[in-house]
Image 1: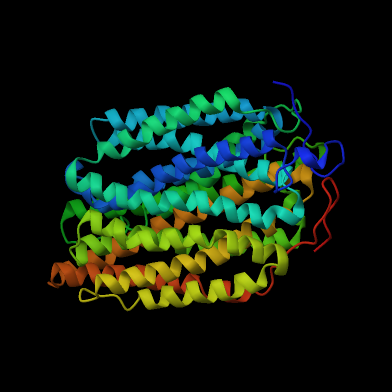
Image 2: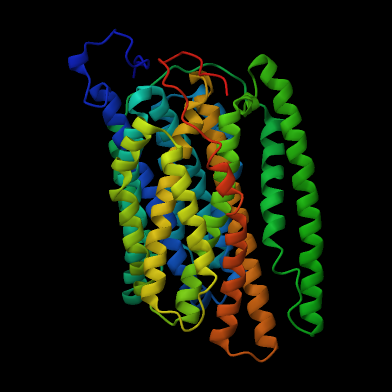
Length: 507
Protein backbone atom coordinates (compact mmCIF):
# COMPACT_ATOMS: atom_id res chain seq x y z
CA UNK A 1 0.00 0.00 0.00
CA UNK A 2 1.14 3.54 -0.65
CA UNK A 3 2.71 5.45 2.17
CA UNK A 4 0.69 8.26 3.66
CA UNK A 5 1.89 11.57 5.04
CA UNK A 6 2.95 11.45 8.66
CA UNK A 7 3.38 15.06 9.70
CA UNK A 8 0.30 15.99 11.71
CA UNK A 9 -0.90 19.55 11.66
CA UNK A 10 0.87 20.54 8.43
CA UNK A 11 -2.30 21.84 6.80
CA UNK A 12 -2.26 19.33 3.95
CA UNK A 13 -5.37 17.62 5.29
CA UNK A 14 -8.56 19.47 6.28
CA UNK A 15 -9.25 19.58 10.02
CA UNK A 16 -12.61 17.90 9.41
CA UNK A 17 -10.75 14.84 8.13
CA UNK A 18 -9.11 14.38 11.52
CA UNK A 19 -10.45 12.79 14.69
CA UNK A 20 -10.68 14.52 18.07
CA UNK A 21 -7.08 13.44 18.77
CA UNK A 22 -5.80 15.25 15.68
CA UNK A 23 -5.35 12.03 13.69
CA UNK A 24 -6.59 11.03 10.28
CA UNK A 25 -9.06 8.10 10.37
CA UNK A 26 -6.52 5.72 8.80
CA UNK A 27 -3.89 6.76 11.35
CA UNK A 28 -6.33 6.22 14.21
CA UNK A 29 -7.23 2.77 12.84
CA UNK A 30 -3.57 1.73 12.66
CA UNK A 31 -2.95 2.82 16.25
CA UNK A 32 -5.93 0.85 17.55
CA UNK A 33 -4.81 -2.24 15.65
CA UNK A 34 -1.35 -1.88 17.16
CA UNK A 35 -2.92 -1.50 20.59
CA UNK A 36 -4.91 -4.69 20.07
CA UNK A 37 -1.71 -6.53 19.17
CA UNK A 38 0.03 -5.07 22.23
CA UNK A 39 -2.91 -6.24 24.36
CA UNK A 40 -2.42 -9.81 23.16
CA UNK A 41 1.32 -9.71 23.83
CA UNK A 42 0.95 -8.27 27.33
CA UNK A 43 -1.88 -10.68 28.14
CA UNK A 44 0.50 -13.52 27.29
CA UNK A 45 3.30 -12.05 29.39
CA UNK A 46 1.18 -11.38 32.47
CA UNK A 47 -0.34 -14.87 32.58
CA UNK A 48 3.04 -16.50 33.26
CA UNK A 49 3.73 -15.05 36.72
CA UNK A 50 0.83 -16.87 38.35
CA UNK A 51 1.66 -20.06 36.45
CA UNK A 52 5.25 -20.37 37.69
CA UNK A 53 4.47 -22.35 40.91
CA UNK A 54 2.27 -24.76 38.90
CA UNK A 55 4.95 -25.22 36.25
CA UNK A 56 7.53 -25.99 38.95
CA UNK A 57 5.32 -28.86 40.11
CA UNK A 58 3.97 -30.08 36.76
CA UNK A 59 7.30 -30.01 34.92
CA UNK A 60 9.45 -31.10 37.87
CA UNK A 61 11.74 -28.06 37.69
CA UNK A 62 13.31 -25.75 40.25
CA UNK A 63 12.36 -22.10 40.85
CA UNK A 64 15.63 -21.03 39.21
CA UNK A 65 14.77 -23.06 36.10
CA UNK A 66 11.20 -21.75 36.08
CA UNK A 67 12.45 -18.17 36.15
CA UNK A 68 13.84 -18.78 32.64
CA UNK A 69 10.31 -18.98 31.26
CA UNK A 70 10.14 -15.28 32.11
CA UNK A 71 13.82 -14.33 31.88
CA UNK A 72 14.29 -15.99 28.47
CA UNK A 73 11.30 -14.00 27.22
CA UNK A 74 12.72 -10.71 28.48
CA UNK A 75 16.26 -11.58 27.43
CA UNK A 76 15.12 -12.27 23.88
CA UNK A 77 13.30 -8.95 23.81
CA UNK A 78 16.46 -7.24 25.02
CA UNK A 79 18.45 -8.85 22.19
CA UNK A 80 15.86 -8.18 19.46
CA UNK A 81 14.65 -4.70 20.46
CA UNK A 82 17.94 -2.92 19.53
CA UNK A 83 17.44 -4.22 15.98
CA UNK A 84 13.95 -2.72 15.76
CA UNK A 85 15.35 0.78 15.30
CA UNK A 86 16.79 -0.47 12.00
CA UNK A 87 13.70 -2.51 11.11
CA UNK A 88 11.37 0.46 11.52
CA UNK A 89 13.62 2.52 9.26
CA UNK A 90 13.98 -0.19 6.61
CA UNK A 91 10.54 -1.84 6.36
CA UNK A 92 6.95 -0.58 6.16
CA UNK A 93 4.50 -0.52 9.05
CA UNK A 94 2.51 -3.34 7.47
CA UNK A 95 5.55 -5.56 6.89
CA UNK A 96 6.82 -5.11 10.43
CA UNK A 97 3.38 -5.75 11.93
CA UNK A 98 2.84 -8.98 9.98
CA UNK A 99 6.33 -10.26 10.88
CA UNK A 100 5.82 -9.49 14.57
CA UNK A 101 2.39 -11.10 14.89
CA UNK A 102 3.44 -14.13 12.83
CA UNK A 103 6.37 -14.79 15.17
CA UNK A 104 4.20 -14.29 18.23
CA UNK A 105 1.49 -16.64 16.92
CA UNK A 106 4.04 -19.31 15.99
CA UNK A 107 5.63 -19.16 19.45
CA UNK A 108 2.22 -19.44 21.11
CA UNK A 109 1.40 -22.52 19.02
CA UNK A 110 4.71 -24.19 19.94
CA UNK A 111 4.07 -23.46 23.62
CA UNK A 112 0.58 -24.94 23.42
CA UNK A 113 1.93 -28.19 21.93
CA UNK A 114 5.16 -28.30 23.96
CA UNK A 115 5.79 -31.70 25.61
CA UNK A 116 8.13 -30.34 28.28
CA UNK A 117 10.34 -27.62 29.72
CA UNK A 118 13.06 -27.21 27.02
CA UNK A 119 10.63 -26.69 24.12
CA UNK A 120 8.47 -24.44 26.29
CA UNK A 121 11.48 -22.16 26.87
CA UNK A 122 12.16 -22.18 23.11
CA UNK A 123 8.52 -21.23 22.46
CA UNK A 124 8.84 -18.28 24.83
CA UNK A 125 11.88 -17.11 22.84
CA UNK A 126 9.88 -17.17 19.58
CA UNK A 127 6.98 -15.35 21.24
CA UNK A 128 9.33 -12.71 22.59
CA UNK A 129 10.82 -12.12 19.13
CA UNK A 130 7.40 -10.95 17.95
CA UNK A 131 6.60 -8.95 21.08
CA UNK A 132 9.97 -7.19 20.90
CA UNK A 133 9.13 -5.81 17.46
CA UNK A 134 5.55 -4.87 18.32
CA UNK A 135 6.15 -2.57 21.28
CA UNK A 136 8.66 -0.18 19.61
CA UNK A 137 6.42 -0.15 16.52
CA UNK A 138 3.52 1.07 18.67
CA UNK A 139 5.56 3.73 20.45
CA UNK A 140 7.22 5.01 17.26
CA UNK A 141 3.88 5.23 15.45
CA UNK A 142 2.32 7.19 18.30
CA UNK A 143 5.18 9.66 18.42
CA UNK A 144 5.12 10.06 14.64
CA UNK A 145 1.44 10.73 14.03
CA UNK A 146 0.08 12.19 17.31
CA UNK A 147 0.43 16.00 17.69
CA UNK A 148 2.77 16.95 20.58
CA UNK A 149 0.06 18.62 22.69
CA UNK A 150 -2.08 15.43 22.50
CA UNK A 151 0.61 12.86 23.32
CA UNK A 152 -0.05 12.64 27.04
CA UNK A 153 -3.77 12.15 26.44
CA UNK A 154 -3.10 9.44 23.83
CA UNK A 155 -0.63 7.71 26.15
CA UNK A 156 -3.37 7.78 28.77
CA UNK A 157 -5.77 6.07 26.38
CA UNK A 158 -3.07 3.58 25.53
CA UNK A 159 -2.72 2.74 29.22
CA UNK A 160 -6.45 1.96 29.43
CA UNK A 161 -6.17 -0.69 26.73
CA UNK A 162 -2.81 -2.06 27.85
CA UNK A 163 -3.89 -2.21 31.51
CA UNK A 164 -6.77 -4.50 30.62
CA UNK A 165 -4.25 -7.23 29.88
CA UNK A 166 -2.62 -7.17 33.35
CA UNK A 167 -6.13 -7.02 34.83
CA UNK A 168 -7.35 -10.05 32.90
CA UNK A 169 -4.09 -12.02 32.60
CA UNK A 170 -3.37 -13.17 36.17
CA UNK A 171 -7.05 -13.80 36.96
CA UNK A 172 -7.60 -15.74 33.73
CA UNK A 173 -4.39 -17.67 34.35
CA UNK A 174 -5.47 -18.55 37.88
CA UNK A 175 -8.88 -19.79 36.69
CA UNK A 176 -7.31 -21.94 33.95
CA UNK A 177 -4.69 -23.37 36.29
CA UNK A 178 -7.28 -24.27 38.93
CA UNK A 179 -9.74 -25.83 36.46
CA UNK A 180 -7.75 -27.03 33.43
CA UNK A 181 -3.98 -26.92 32.84
CA UNK A 182 -1.18 -24.48 32.04
CA UNK A 183 -1.47 -25.32 28.30
CA UNK A 184 -4.79 -23.50 28.13
CA UNK A 185 -2.98 -20.24 28.94
CA UNK A 186 -1.57 -20.45 25.42
CA UNK A 187 -4.74 -22.03 24.04
CA UNK A 188 -6.72 -18.90 24.93
CA UNK A 189 -4.10 -16.47 23.57
CA UNK A 190 -3.52 -18.25 20.23
CA UNK A 191 -6.90 -17.54 18.54
CA UNK A 192 -6.79 -13.90 19.68
CA UNK A 193 -3.31 -13.56 18.18
CA UNK A 194 -4.40 -15.13 14.90
CA UNK A 195 -7.39 -12.79 14.62
CA UNK A 196 -5.14 -9.78 15.32
CA UNK A 197 -2.76 -11.01 12.61
CA UNK A 198 -5.53 -11.48 10.05
CA UNK A 199 -7.24 -8.15 10.74
CA UNK A 200 -3.95 -6.25 10.75
CA UNK A 201 -2.80 -7.83 7.50
CA UNK A 202 -6.05 -6.68 5.91
CA UNK A 203 -6.42 -3.16 7.34
CA UNK A 204 -3.02 -1.80 8.37
CA UNK A 205 -1.76 1.07 6.21
CA UNK A 206 1.85 2.11 5.98
CA UNK A 207 2.83 5.12 8.09
CA UNK A 208 6.01 7.02 7.38
CA UNK A 209 8.69 6.44 4.80
CA UNK A 210 11.34 3.75 4.59
CA UNK A 211 14.98 4.15 3.68
CA UNK A 212 17.37 1.57 2.29
CA UNK A 213 19.99 1.01 4.97
CA UNK A 214 22.23 -2.07 5.25
CA UNK A 215 22.08 -3.96 8.50
CA UNK A 216 25.39 -4.15 10.32
CA UNK A 217 25.85 -7.84 11.18
CA UNK A 218 28.74 -7.31 13.66
CA UNK A 219 26.51 -4.91 15.61
CA UNK A 220 23.75 -7.54 15.79
CA UNK A 221 26.24 -10.13 17.09
CA UNK A 222 27.77 -7.75 19.63
CA UNK A 223 24.31 -6.71 20.82
CA UNK A 224 23.28 -10.32 21.37
CA UNK A 225 26.43 -11.22 23.30
CA UNK A 226 26.39 -7.95 25.24
CA UNK A 227 22.84 -7.89 26.53
CA UNK A 228 22.54 -11.69 26.58
CA UNK A 229 25.76 -12.20 28.51
CA UNK A 230 24.85 -9.67 31.19
CA UNK A 231 21.37 -11.06 31.83
CA UNK A 232 22.54 -14.69 31.71
CA UNK A 233 25.33 -13.91 34.15
CA UNK A 234 22.86 -12.33 36.56
CA UNK A 235 20.64 -15.42 36.33
CA UNK A 236 23.51 -17.53 37.69
CA UNK A 237 23.76 -15.61 40.96
CA UNK A 238 21.41 -17.95 42.84
CA UNK A 239 23.09 -21.15 41.66
CA UNK A 240 26.56 -19.84 42.52
CA UNK A 241 25.70 -19.96 46.23
CA UNK A 242 25.98 -23.52 47.59
CA UNK A 243 22.99 -24.44 49.75
CA UNK A 244 24.17 -27.77 51.04
CA UNK A 245 27.14 -29.91 51.88
CA UNK A 246 26.92 -32.64 49.24
CA UNK A 247 29.54 -32.97 46.51
CA UNK A 248 26.90 -32.55 43.80
CA UNK A 249 25.67 -29.26 45.29
CA UNK A 250 29.23 -27.96 45.62
CA UNK A 251 30.00 -28.90 42.01
CA UNK A 252 26.81 -27.21 40.78
CA UNK A 253 27.71 -24.08 42.73
CA UNK A 254 31.20 -24.03 41.19
CA UNK A 255 29.80 -24.38 37.65
CA UNK A 256 27.31 -21.57 38.27
CA UNK A 257 30.06 -19.31 39.66
CA UNK A 258 32.25 -19.88 36.59
CA UNK A 259 29.27 -19.29 34.32
CA UNK A 260 28.47 -16.05 36.12
CA UNK A 261 32.01 -14.68 35.78
CA UNK A 262 32.42 -15.73 32.14
CA UNK A 263 28.97 -14.51 31.07
CA UNK A 264 29.29 -11.12 32.76
CA UNK A 265 32.81 -10.66 31.37
CA UNK A 266 31.71 -11.50 27.84
CA UNK A 267 28.62 -9.32 28.24
CA UNK A 268 30.49 -6.24 29.44
CA UNK A 269 33.20 -6.53 26.75
CA UNK A 270 30.68 -7.14 23.95
CA UNK A 271 28.49 -4.26 25.12
CA UNK A 272 31.49 -1.91 25.19
CA UNK A 273 32.42 -2.96 21.63
CA UNK A 274 28.79 -2.55 20.56
CA UNK A 275 28.69 1.02 21.87
CA UNK A 276 32.03 1.83 20.21
CA UNK A 277 30.80 0.49 16.87
CA UNK A 278 27.54 2.44 17.05
CA UNK A 279 29.41 5.66 17.76
CA UNK A 280 31.43 5.11 14.60
CA UNK A 281 28.52 4.03 12.38
CA UNK A 282 26.18 6.82 13.44
CA UNK A 283 28.51 9.37 11.84
CA UNK A 284 27.19 8.11 8.49
CA UNK A 285 23.66 7.43 9.83
CA UNK A 286 24.26 3.66 9.53
CA UNK A 287 24.14 2.65 13.21
CA UNK A 288 22.01 -0.31 14.23
CA UNK A 289 21.05 1.66 17.35
CA UNK A 290 21.82 5.37 17.04
CA UNK A 291 23.16 6.50 20.41
CA UNK A 292 22.80 10.20 19.64
CA UNK A 293 19.48 9.91 21.49
CA UNK A 294 21.52 10.15 24.70
CA UNK A 295 22.63 13.67 23.78
CA UNK A 296 19.31 14.72 25.29
CA UNK A 297 19.86 14.99 29.03
CA UNK A 298 16.13 14.62 29.65
CA UNK A 299 16.06 11.36 27.67
CA UNK A 300 19.13 10.03 29.50
CA UNK A 301 17.70 10.85 32.92
CA UNK A 302 14.39 9.25 31.94
CA UNK A 303 16.19 6.06 30.88
CA UNK A 304 18.07 5.88 34.19
CA UNK A 305 14.80 6.35 36.07
CA UNK A 306 13.03 3.74 33.94
CA UNK A 307 15.86 1.24 34.36
CA UNK A 308 15.80 1.38 38.16
CA UNK A 309 12.00 1.36 38.22
CA UNK A 310 11.96 -1.74 35.98
CA UNK A 311 14.47 -3.60 38.16
CA UNK A 312 12.30 -3.07 41.21
CA UNK A 313 8.92 -3.51 39.49
CA UNK A 314 9.55 -6.67 37.45
CA UNK A 315 11.44 -8.34 40.28
CA UNK A 316 8.69 -7.66 42.82
CA UNK A 317 5.79 -8.78 40.59
CA UNK A 318 7.64 -12.06 39.95
CA UNK A 319 8.34 -12.71 43.63
CA UNK A 320 4.81 -11.87 44.83
CA UNK A 321 2.96 -14.86 43.22
CA UNK A 322 5.59 -17.20 44.71
CA UNK A 323 5.13 -15.56 48.11
CA UNK A 324 1.32 -15.75 47.93
CA UNK A 325 1.17 -19.39 46.89
CA UNK A 326 4.20 -20.84 48.72
CA UNK A 327 4.03 -18.83 51.95
CA UNK A 328 0.40 -17.78 52.38
CA UNK A 329 -0.94 -20.92 50.68
CA UNK A 330 -3.50 -19.17 48.46
CA UNK A 331 -4.70 -20.62 45.16
CA UNK A 332 -3.62 -19.54 41.68
CA UNK A 333 -7.02 -17.92 41.11
CA UNK A 334 -6.78 -15.94 44.36
CA UNK A 335 -3.26 -14.86 43.35
CA UNK A 336 -4.66 -13.48 40.11
CA UNK A 337 -7.47 -11.70 41.93
CA UNK A 338 -4.94 -9.95 44.19
CA UNK A 339 -3.42 -8.32 41.09
CA UNK A 340 -6.79 -7.41 39.53
CA UNK A 341 -7.63 -4.15 41.43
CA UNK A 342 -4.18 -2.69 40.79
CA UNK A 343 -4.32 -3.39 37.06
CA UNK A 344 -7.79 -1.85 36.85
CA UNK A 345 -6.57 1.23 38.73
CA UNK A 346 -3.74 1.64 36.20
CA UNK A 347 -6.23 1.48 33.35
CA UNK A 348 -8.91 3.72 34.84
CA UNK A 349 -6.46 6.44 35.85
CA UNK A 350 -4.73 6.40 32.45
CA UNK A 351 -6.83 9.14 30.79
CA UNK A 352 -6.57 11.35 33.89
CA UNK A 353 -2.79 10.91 34.06
CA UNK A 354 -2.49 11.70 30.34
CA UNK A 355 -4.47 14.93 30.66
CA UNK A 356 -2.50 15.99 33.73
CA UNK A 357 0.75 15.40 31.83
CA UNK A 358 -0.41 17.46 28.83
CA UNK A 359 -1.40 20.38 31.06
CA UNK A 360 1.11 20.39 33.93
CA UNK A 361 4.03 18.19 32.86
CA UNK A 362 5.97 15.44 34.63
CA UNK A 363 6.77 16.49 38.18
CA UNK A 364 3.19 16.74 39.40
CA UNK A 365 2.87 13.03 38.50
CA UNK A 366 6.38 11.61 38.77
CA UNK A 367 7.26 12.96 42.21
CA UNK A 368 4.21 11.67 44.14
CA UNK A 369 4.11 8.50 42.00
CA UNK A 370 7.72 7.64 42.74
CA UNK A 371 7.42 8.36 46.45
CA UNK A 372 4.27 6.22 46.61
CA UNK A 373 5.91 3.32 44.77
CA UNK A 374 9.07 3.45 46.88
CA UNK A 375 7.08 3.67 50.11
CA UNK A 376 5.03 0.62 49.12
CA UNK A 377 8.17 -1.35 48.27
CA UNK A 378 9.47 -0.67 51.77
CA UNK A 379 6.09 -1.74 53.16
CA UNK A 380 6.46 -5.04 51.25
CA UNK A 381 9.53 -5.82 53.38
CA UNK A 382 7.20 -6.24 56.38
CA UNK A 383 5.37 -9.19 54.80
CA UNK A 384 5.75 -12.55 56.58
CA UNK A 385 3.88 -15.87 56.86
CA UNK A 386 1.15 -14.21 58.94
CA UNK A 387 0.37 -11.31 56.60
CA UNK A 388 -3.26 -11.08 55.46
CA UNK A 389 -3.99 -11.56 51.77
CA UNK A 390 -6.08 -8.37 51.97
CA UNK A 391 -3.00 -6.45 53.08
CA UNK A 392 -1.11 -7.72 50.05
CA UNK A 393 -4.02 -6.81 47.74
CA UNK A 394 -4.23 -3.23 49.06
CA UNK A 395 -0.46 -2.80 48.83
CA UNK A 396 -0.45 -4.17 45.27
CA UNK A 397 -3.21 -1.74 44.28
CA UNK A 398 -1.45 1.31 45.69
CA UNK A 399 1.86 0.21 44.13
CA UNK A 400 0.13 -0.02 40.75
CA UNK A 401 -1.17 3.53 41.15
CA UNK A 402 2.33 4.80 41.89
CA UNK A 403 3.70 2.96 38.86
CA UNK A 404 0.97 4.38 36.60
CA UNK A 405 1.91 7.88 37.73
CA UNK A 406 5.56 7.12 36.95
CA UNK A 407 5.69 5.11 33.72
CA UNK A 408 3.32 7.24 31.59
CA UNK A 409 5.25 10.51 32.10
CA UNK A 410 8.57 8.70 31.59
CA UNK A 411 7.51 7.12 28.28
CA UNK A 412 6.10 10.37 26.92
CA UNK A 413 8.73 12.81 28.17
CA UNK A 414 11.67 10.65 27.12
CA UNK A 415 10.60 10.23 23.49
CA UNK A 416 9.31 13.80 23.22
CA UNK A 417 12.85 14.96 24.05
CA UNK A 418 14.11 13.62 20.70
CA UNK A 419 14.00 14.87 17.15
CA UNK A 420 11.41 12.97 15.05
CA UNK A 421 14.09 11.19 13.00
CA UNK A 422 15.30 9.54 16.21
CA UNK A 423 11.89 8.27 17.39
CA UNK A 424 12.47 4.71 16.16
CA UNK A 425 15.88 4.53 17.87
CA UNK A 426 14.50 6.14 21.01
CA UNK A 427 11.68 3.58 21.14
CA UNK A 428 14.25 0.81 20.74
CA UNK A 429 16.35 2.22 23.59
CA UNK A 430 13.28 2.55 25.84
CA UNK A 431 12.35 -1.08 25.19
CA UNK A 432 15.92 -2.32 25.62
CA UNK A 433 16.41 -0.52 28.94
CA UNK A 434 13.07 -1.73 30.26
CA UNK A 435 13.60 -5.36 29.26
CA UNK A 436 17.26 -5.71 30.28
CA UNK A 437 16.58 -4.01 33.60
CA UNK A 438 13.47 -6.10 34.12
CA UNK A 439 15.29 -9.34 33.32
CA UNK A 440 18.08 -8.32 35.68
CA UNK A 441 15.57 -7.54 38.42
CA UNK A 442 13.84 -10.89 38.03
CA UNK A 443 17.10 -12.84 37.93
CA UNK A 444 18.51 -11.02 40.94
CA UNK A 445 15.42 -11.20 43.16
CA UNK A 446 14.59 -14.83 42.38
CA UNK A 447 18.21 -15.74 43.07
CA UNK A 448 18.14 -13.93 46.41
CA UNK A 449 14.78 -15.47 47.33
CA UNK A 450 16.02 -18.98 46.50
CA UNK A 451 19.34 -18.55 48.29
CA UNK A 452 17.85 -17.19 51.51
CA UNK A 453 15.01 -19.73 51.52
CA UNK A 454 17.42 -22.64 51.02
CA UNK A 455 19.71 -21.37 53.79
CA UNK A 456 16.73 -21.08 56.16
CA UNK A 457 15.56 -24.61 55.34
CA UNK A 458 19.09 -25.96 55.93
CA UNK A 459 18.98 -24.28 59.34
CA UNK A 460 15.78 -26.16 60.22
CA UNK A 461 13.34 -23.27 59.81
CA UNK A 462 9.75 -24.17 58.87
CA UNK A 463 8.94 -24.06 55.14
CA UNK A 464 6.52 -21.11 55.32
CA UNK A 465 8.88 -19.07 57.49
CA UNK A 466 11.81 -19.87 55.18
CA UNK A 467 9.79 -18.74 52.17
CA UNK A 468 8.82 -15.54 53.96
CA UNK A 469 12.48 -14.84 54.78
CA UNK A 470 13.41 -15.31 51.13
CA UNK A 471 10.62 -12.98 49.96
CA UNK A 472 11.64 -10.40 52.57
CA UNK A 473 15.23 -10.37 51.29
CA UNK A 474 14.04 -9.96 47.68
CA UNK A 475 11.62 -7.17 48.60
CA UNK A 476 14.39 -5.41 50.51
CA UNK A 477 16.54 -5.31 47.38
CA UNK A 478 13.65 -3.78 45.43
CA UNK A 479 13.10 -1.16 48.12
CA UNK A 480 16.78 -0.18 48.19
CA UNK A 481 16.87 0.09 44.38
CA UNK A 482 13.93 2.52 44.54
CA UNK A 483 15.76 5.10 46.68
CA UNK A 484 17.67 6.88 43.85
CA UNK A 485 14.32 7.28 42.06
CA UNK A 486 13.24 9.78 44.70
CA UNK A 487 15.96 12.16 43.48
CA UNK A 488 15.49 11.44 39.76
CA UNK A 489 11.78 12.30 39.92
CA UNK A 490 12.66 15.98 40.48
CA UNK A 491 15.10 16.15 37.53
CA UNK A 492 12.90 14.99 34.63
CA UNK A 493 10.61 17.48 32.92
CA UNK A 494 8.22 17.70 30.01
CA UNK A 495 9.86 19.03 26.82
CA UNK A 496 8.18 22.06 25.28
CA UNK A 497 5.60 21.12 22.65
CA UNK A 498 7.20 21.25 19.24
CA UNK A 499 5.68 21.19 15.74
CA UNK A 500 6.32 17.95 13.88
CA UNK A 501 9.79 17.93 12.37
CA UNK A 502 11.19 20.64 14.64
CA UNK A 503 14.15 20.00 16.87
CA UNK A 504 13.28 19.82 20.57
CA UNK A 505 14.56 22.34 23.02
CA UNK A 506 17.99 21.40 24.30
CA UNK A 507 18.14 19.96 27.79
